[in-house]
Image (cartoon, rainbow, N blue to C red):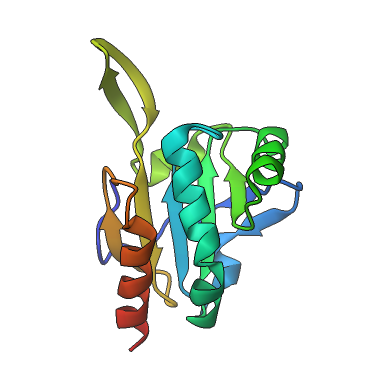
Length: 155
């Protein structure tokens, strides 16, 4: 997994509408990446809704916020429409970004072992360095915590 102080791995991924987003073009703005397992599940929905609810606050702090999962552009588009989300969702169908950030890992649930995205958030500063990592995120209050860390970073 990437760690605080590392240079954030660059990437280019399509969003829910097919537009390409490249991390390196966000500089000098801070970026929040929240990696989540799957569209339209209870925890993932709540997390995306929480980041959507704070979208204006993140924008006022100068940050770009992206949700990343393996789901397709079409699934992301349906998810956004169904849940009235405004946060940009990026499709990492090939697992390249999830692997480069170390969030694609072995998981266990109900006695079964499988590979999947470990819910993780990464805050990247305006210089492209990882300012903070939240591994194994618990959703309630998380978006607020990330916003507070962003404000501290910008202070």
